[in-house]
Length: 482
Image (cartoon, rainbow, N blue to C red; front, side, top):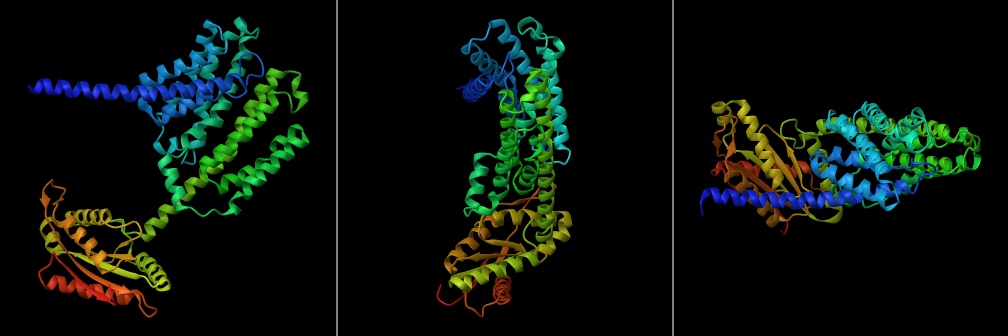
């Protein structure tokens, strides 16, 4: 086969794979938009505007998180979804096309505005993220209002100004309420990982949510305009207690409930006189109401991540990201105490880079730093999740292996030794450098009198023996039956 034929075949295969992926993604997006639009249509309290219209904000959020879907897959999928929902429910052809253009204007205006923001802003992790969200949703709502407002006089006996206000406030409210949820929803992998790490559940965590439910019930029972503010303190409590995603979910459910009840004329009967203007005012008010807990949750998230960064910097070596000596000693004592209670074996490896001073002298300290980072990465790739890895000296690292006997520790040490020696490391000059390490291993049956200092001292003695007998080897010491 000629080379050109091979390239053509590969190119054709790539195109077919891409088309199948795009088709699958487009189908799912069409289905989501269709169901969201259908849901909105059946919440229409009057005329043509739904109390809840999640389709536009849902499309906007999906495109923001997956920009590659915007053209042409997302655009075509959204058009099909919008048109199908309207035609199935008896919408007129011209009006359906008109409103579909308005829906797309809202979603794509927000999408283009959000594309100018940083990744942290897109996940609402910055203190000013909610302000950026407010501006983007307001502009996208007004853009959709400009497109759709002329349909008011033609189809709904409503003047242009009233149509613009009603459409803009509705789009703004729905975007403010749903978009934070779409932007912060965790992936299935991350969600399952969180559930595996936190299998025990603390019922006390439900107290803010229960307080919110009680305040909502009270606000509905009182049935006065001021009651809309009753749940706010509990919602702020939730914002300080839960994740941004959970806060966005609770805020959306609360505000959508209030919007549906009001649009159904079940709450605040005095507003029913000038219904459309009252609904516009209430939807705008509810949207602004939602900004409070969202802002608190965003600032709380930013603060918590900053605290985590500080804790990480305090506990980890700034260069290799391995545990610093102090944190390694603290956590190592915790593991040792646990082993003492259960009577399990505990092992420790101490490894040292061979001829590291010569590397620094010949290639410079920048190359030495690069070597340290790459060695740490290879060690991390070959240890278990429960193992403790720290940098305890210049070119010296230690690994504590809980529930590991001598044979298991020996196998891990051999993997680390090969991982470093078999593959050359890359220097900044793009040249390769082969290095080796020496490893001292100590394995103990945990006893009440055993200390971490003794464990490390024994492994350190084994390490020096490995150095003296030729380097690039493992010397082990075991106490009690392995």
